[in-house]
Structure formats: C-alpha cells, structure tokens
Length: 121
Image 1 (spheres, rainbow, N blue to C red):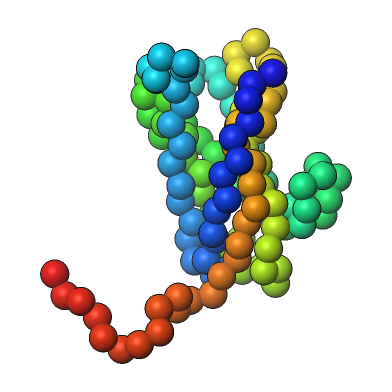
Image 2 (image 1 turned 90 degrees about the vertical axis):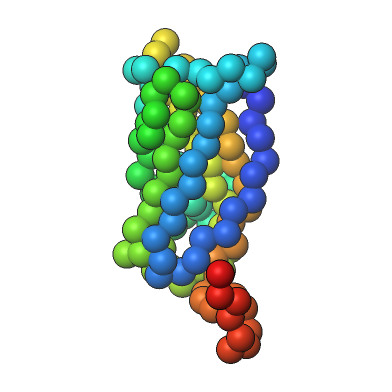
C-alpha cells in the first residue's frame, strides 16, 4: 500500500476543471504510467459508500513523465453542494489499486474577486 497524500482542491461551479498530477518515485524520477488506470471522484463525505457527487475523467497526459490529467466539464461541475471529499485511485500494471491523493473539496461560484479594477499585462 502506498502513502496517500492529503490535497484539498477548489472546484468552480459550472466551470471546466483541469488539474495535472505528476507521479514520482522516492528518487523524484517520473513513474511510467504504461498500463496504469485511474479514477477520481468527489463524494459528500470521506467514506467510500458516501453519496457520489461527480466522477472526473482521468487520463495519462504524458505516460513517460508520469503526468496525469484530471478533468471535469462545466456540465458535471454544476452541483448544489458547497463541500465534498475527493480521491484519486490508481491501479498499477500488477492490478493493485491504491488511493494516491485525497482531500476536502470546496465548490465555489464565480466571481471570487470583488471589484471592477483589472490589471492589464
């Protein structure tokens, strides 16, 4: 079993969500994702039998670099909840599944900045 890292996230309601995760070994070298599989979900609470809020699409964005893309379209982020709990479960080529990332989720609405002054660059 691997060590699971606590990683809270914020998901903007009714907006596309994309996050990249890089898999590294103890020497900080990339882990090849050849023949790996993954799933990431948000539930109302931490227990796996809690009500499911949404399931992200999970894919290998770069197999050799150990880069994983976690994506949810604005259609699935259109939720009523304000909080939740998520995890990323990966299955290695030997068929062993483990949670690698987990944490609290905050669903927020836009805008997150109040005011009408924008910086132009």
